[in-house]
Length: 263
Length: 260
View 1 (cartoon, rainbow over the protein chains, first blue to last red):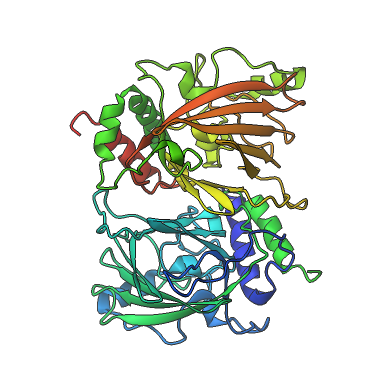
View 2 (tube, rainbow over the protein chains, first blue to last red):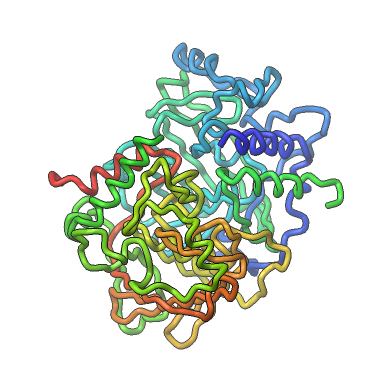
């Protein structure tokens, strides 16, 4: 494991510094795109890639590793946790050997909403009773029940939380709780407790664009709820590729491919 | 990590020893069973659990596909001899095993992914069939849109799958494997030429059969077959991550506990 993690981490850092809009240009042709039906429940199916301002290679763009430029409103407990986080991102970055980032030390899942802070696409599969989010990143997934069932916390806190969703007109509202306290909110190490409650409102603003308005609520870590905004672009020609954190070797190859100037 | 792995192994043994009823009790949710009728045979959607006889000892179906040895080439046999499995008749300890799943939480590949006592779920859309596995939260995407595989794919742990319907049978064709997985839990080999063909069929509304053909001319002298059976369950998949041996062990203990 010792050799693989540093490579993986290096790959993450390299990938983050490159221009995210360039990722995946050579994707193979694949799933046919579906038009969003206008007269019934919207259809968010497809492969989506986070879009943001083009990242200069010279400056660490904050949107790669955190949700907002400004600090979220932490409680005293939250501040204490944040100080203990030794992130390998941002302006005071620790080295891979020094970081205590759970994703780097153990290939642990990133949790929500950190799962969105990675330069790889996600795919939404819409089924009758649930919506499934498949992430290329570490082949992770989320299953969001849309059949009206309540949250299920019977097996105790989980890495990726328990998500239920419902429609409000053209907006999909996803409510997630039952998180364990072992993940970071973002790649900088902003904290959360088991009281974390994430509410997301997804809307397809036009055929090629999806927005996710996120509300983070955690009275133990934050003095009040705070919000973030993600924008995603449809990639109709893409299929998700396989990716496993444990396989640092392959992961490094993919990173090299993604950041190669020849692309 | 060693204690966790030992715990996992013991848990797995214990789990297979439990009756299917005991397993079901802990999986109870208020998830409604998908209504199954004859007209739904072309829809495999739902959560499926391997339907095998209760095991009171280490029965072969826990760790390999068939009781008889598959027809290995000399290359295949040599590779098989290198496997130090913690299953079967000559078990190595967890410290000694070179099982890639137990050593490093690597993905199990196909068809080994079925040889775990956890359910999987089929989700069917117009363009693909998605298989979500509870084990290590793995997945497979089986593209049914008729488009060819990307010729530039790097070798994959779980292979690249395309599927099509042949009457009421979903035929899944998987290639592009890397050579880093074991075919099963006892360490039968495969090369990167592995070609797995599966024919999934609902033989009854709540019963699924997977007829598997293993074709790997480097490892086996001829293609050989196996058959897996699954029963539909009104369950929801739970989260599971191999890296998190602690939680994994907790789930195993829960499944195996007589107090459930």
